Image (cartoon, rainbow, N blue to C red; front, side, top):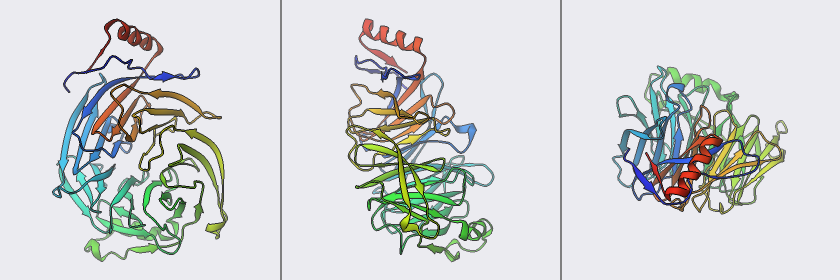
Length: 389
């Protein structure tokens, strides 16, 4: 990457008194002027934990975060549909361990890209409207869930291109589905949320034979006996407005609405009565100036930290291990003033945080120790500016 010069504001985020982790801005990439809606580290394969993908417009870009703070470009994909606008991207892998990237957006077609040969492996066709989010099953990384404006969630096998299950209908969402997430330990469960203000928990256990069949299916994928699932095991109304991001934290759930906060809560299920379950809110994480929908937070693989951007270009980092909730740090820079749509937290040690911005910029923040904080602040006062590589 070429050297860039930023303004004279300190590159160190503002700290809370209890903070034990400090960050400095180490790099930024200006992909163009097209808004970026997604950025995601690879959490599937430890060999590629430093690699990440960004998505926006009809392009998907793959990068590698190097130890010296630089970012190397690995691969750029441009969809043949120039009107496409990708909203989401996730890492998966084939049964032989080869890395794939899956992405979807405005035209509802999901692209599965083989990273090694830089070609489209599959195009998954089925959604009747745009795709808002794709998430990968951590225990079986050939499986992905896609959340769509068509009020459905679909389970896909990216190796075979099969749509296995469709979650919609009788007790499904009544408006756009915006976010979805697999349970980290229970391969049968997932959550989703949407613009109807509800969050739903679904179980695939009863239909797992369809999942197994998708790996051995030899006929045309369109002939697979895709199963409709219409009844979730739990429905919650924790928020009173649009819900646009949810993630599991063990058996607890993190969810965000357009109410300037994220909530951590426990679903209390009543067996066989999905509409009668209750929820117990445990913690709240306030996020100022975050009342637009499609602003998504991220957690590291080990659930130590939660990070989210806002409309002012700032990033709030919360300690997920603390009770009551502790704001670790607020990351800001005078040139980062555009809406941040999504963050990504590096999975190995949480030492790198990325932010995808509405102005087409990717920001990279890296953790530093307290001695480095003092040095960087001192240099900033003497020179008035900082060099990023």
